[in-house]
Every structure is written in C-alpha cells, then in structure tokens.
Image 1 (cartoon, rainbow, N blue to C red):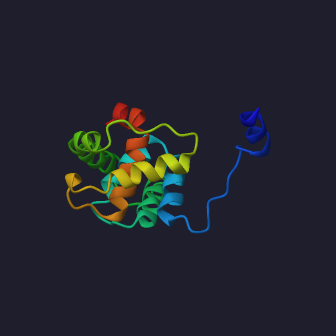
Image 2: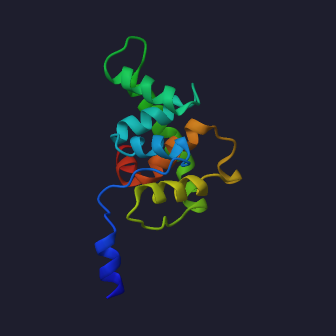
Length: 143
C-alpha cells in the first residue's frame, strides 16, 4: 500500500534540476543526447580547448562546415584517446549503478572519474569522458 501512495504522489515524468546542482551536470545531460561521433569529436577537441561549452560550440560549427576544422580528424583523435583511456575508466568505475534518473547516473559517473588513475585531465575532458562512458555502447561501436 505504501508503494502505491508514493507512486501516486510522485510525478516521475519530468524533474527540474535543483538550483544548486553543478553546471557540469546540466552540460552533461545535454551531451548525453549527442551522437557518438560528436562525443568523440568533442573528446578529440578537448586536447585543444578544455572548456566544455567551447568544445560543444566548436564541434557544432565543425559539423556545419566551418572552414579550417577537420571533423574526421577530431573524431579519429577522440577515438584514439577513448581506446587508450577506456581500460582505466573501466577499472575506476567498472559497473555503473543503474538509475532511472539521468542526473543521478551522470553525477555518479562524473564523481567516479575524479581519480588519479586517469592522469591529469581538465574539466572538458572529464565531462566528455563521462558522457562517453555512459554512452559507451555507441561510442565503442564507432571508436
């Protein structure tokens, strides 16, 4: 009976983020909606700029044909980095806990990747690695 009452009182279709949630969480939620090639291009781009917003905008511009940006090269760079670091991520966070909340899944994975085992990584790198890890089935298939 208690479970029924709780389910009736809680609307699980949509939840606004808490006002004190880290910005990285919302950036991550947006990144999780990208195709695997964009995630890998973003990961490749993090070697050039380590700000998640700049990386996302640059990858978007690249996909729309901005001259001087090589999409295939960024995807290859991201795929190479992903293949090299994936075993370390798997060792640090082998079985992500399943959660119905995307934000909870993101926050758990993001915290798990805050480990010296990955070496020194910047903010954008950590954000893109977290997105790639949570979407690893798609990313692995492309990498």
